[in-house]
Length: 348
Image 1 (cartoon, rainbow, N blue to C red):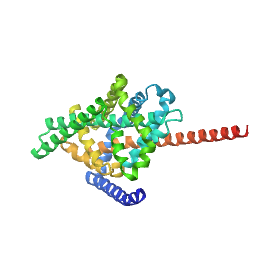
Image 2 (image 1 turned 30 degrees about the vertical axis):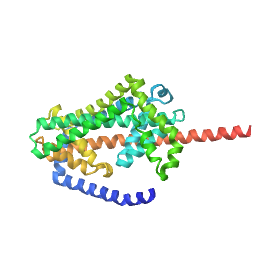
Image 3 (image 1 turned 90 degrees about the vertical axis):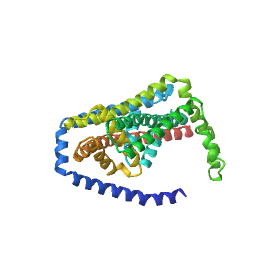
Image 4 (image 1 turned 120 degrees about the horizontal axis):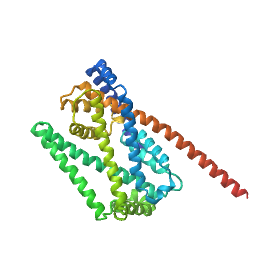
């Protein structure tokens, strides 16, 4: 069944990727390759600064993730976790399925000394914190948009409704953690009533409960680590806002930090819309061109902003790919040593 679904989705994803690449080429042609090159040249040394700032954000994200492991973080080094973070985000550049696969990589390559339940719960909390903190930044950014820009009544109404939906999501998530709702075991119990999932749920029931307890205990037993990790995730989104401001400033565009916050909030909505487009190619660039026009900037400025941020993502994705290769080789070597030790033990 899953293979049939995968075969069905593959042509659709290839079609989306083809459309995205075509759209990107059209946008470059529409904005003017000469203008894009001129804007990129204007960045100068600032491009290296943007790359470095992206690296700082990855370090902060890794620090936030490491806090979630509590005492078990001694089983894995910070450098290994940073490499896993970069490798996961490199795979995540391929779209929604890539992000899911990347999270699985983080769990599987944490190391043999890390309990599976702890690895799964840390990655789950990390992803949840990133989404909830992004929702908060988006809420503030959309409120900034409603304050700064004279939007049409209908568009302002939609933006207000979306803010209310995001607030409801954040509120429900907060209540669920505080009241210790069975967020995993509850749905698992319902799935267990379906014959197709029954055997798998029964086999993994202990792991599901263990992961759920780790998720809820993180708030109730270690509130200091909980809030520190959450604040670091907020700091990552604040870094993204500053990145927008920095790039536009280097281009000579006059946009305040308040405006950069609004642009980043709208960009997050574009990222959601482009989840099913591999690499978000075309949709990301087109969305940025439309967004900056709302602030009185040219389409070429929006394309340059998107292209610069994509270059930063590609640079660190390449670093992440190298990290993945190194981690995979180390795992193979570790497995080979383990097999040799087993052979020697059997002979003895």
